[in-house]
Length: 82
Image 1 (cartoon, helix red, strand yellow):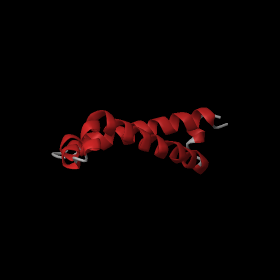
Image 2 (tube, one colour; image 1 turned 180 degrees about the vertical axis):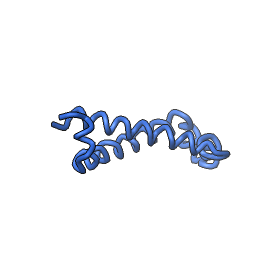
Image 3 (cartoon, helix red, strand yellow; image 1 turned 120 degrees about the vertical axis):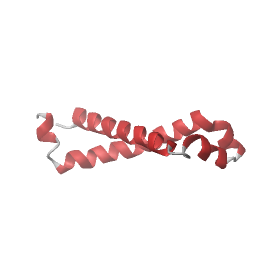
């Protein structure tokens, strides 16, 4: 089945969300640990917020992860759906 015919089905988008949400959570946790693992384990969440989210950094932080998760979800759903 062609990609454009698949994306018109609601089953495609349900499966995409089932894949994208866990991937999004996984990528977010890994990213936070890579960027601020010392601060997280020290309990300094003010520093974690300052490094990752304050001054408009949250747009970049969440934007890339949402985009990457959605693309990955679409790719995997398209690959596995008949």
